[in-house]
Image (cartoon, rainbow, N blue to C red; front, top):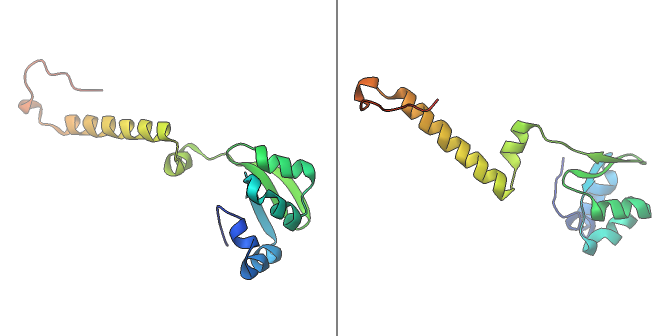
Length: 123
């Protein structure tokens, strides 16, 4: 099993070419314009597949099994998404949720006798 974010790393080296051409299954996700022509030639892509790889969204691409090609969309579960996201907005939301969770647990663990009269615990 080999994974790279830059297919050009493989296609421009002798060992990489061997890995790619001898793999029975490959996934290609969005590609950069700089590498797409070499990828098109190596994977025998149609013009439509080439443009799909240039324009597709997150998690979209092409699945190769032997000579068969199929467009795919990979959708992460909620838990997977929380573990792998690099979206700054999501990361802030996750951090805020952790802080709220920690605050709630600390308050629930506090001795009721230590709280001032009228203190409201978060629920």
